[in-house]
Length: 232
Image (cartoon, rainbow, N blue to C red):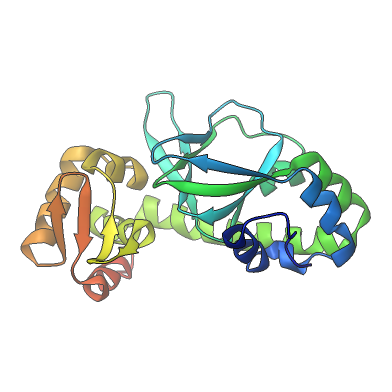
């Protein structure tokens, strides 16, 4: 289905590039009726651990990080969601929220919030809604399993290289990651000191350039080769 005309152009374009475009045309009005634009500044919690959520988010611009936390405060990334991707579908399909999962905006992020209850009712009666959702959840699960495998079995340098490539955005000066060393460490499930040494090594090899809260990717191909290193 095409995006509702009531949405701004950027939101319509993201909608039409997402799985929502696979839904039957006649359900557009149901979703559009409760669709709302949301903006999250860099670092804002889109969804906090333990919070129940009645919405599914379509990312229009920006990047969101979905992660789990331990009682001691350590974090591990489950996946990233960029433009055209949705956040919250597993909760909708399971009918319950995972209390350990949080979502945070990595950079300024614009979203369209969709009613989870409306989507759930449509999925229960429309195979043209249920099947795309099921396939999307399966695809994101596959990506999450791959990321978890990397976080568990890979050494720190490939993990850091992978996350830098996932977190980067293209700006006038090239590819840039807006994150501190602490944020990168949390993303890869490591500690700041280890990540700082890794970033220092990358900088000495002219793979990256570091500035306060900014990491510039000078050699994305080189980082990709490191990220593709097979676990030992």
